[in-house]
Image 1 (spheres, rainbow, N blue to C red):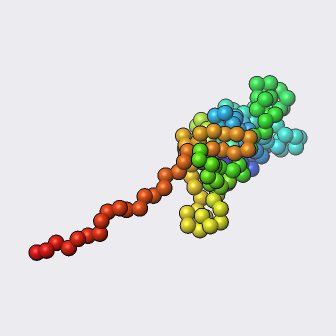
Image 2: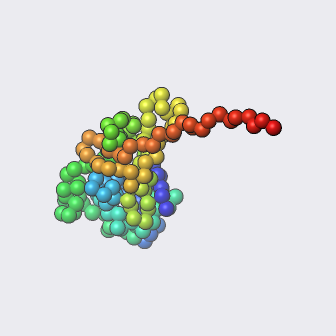
Image 3: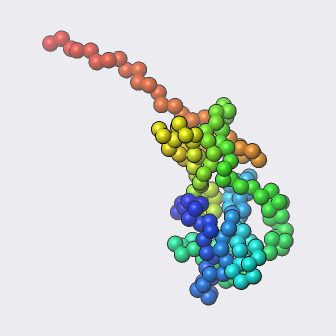
Length: 175
């Protein structure tokens, strides 16, 4: 099931064992190579320190928050050796400019949709400039349309333009 980023960020992390909040999800840890959310930076409710919740430790995302087994699944960042390079990158997709392969500027990312089961970003939503937003609103881009992700921008396939009808005007039939 797809959920918008705004519905999983700044949500409480709920312990199934105690039934209460143990932390609050602050920001996602996104792998720019495959657009997978590897985990979340969380603020611990008890010590107020910043810990990491790995995506494989999430049991479910419910309206009340993110469900985990217990507080013990939250980890200190320095203990996650395999994620060190990813944590050092600190990749953030929000606000990244989106351009086409032919270098046409589309806009900036203002939201994305995540497949909760796999934690892969499936769609990005691009806010267009003021003029285009009056006529078309925001643009949804599927992950298979993304060609390249760099530090400065996201490159997508060229957009299809609606073709004008070239059908001849109707000709009255003599009868």
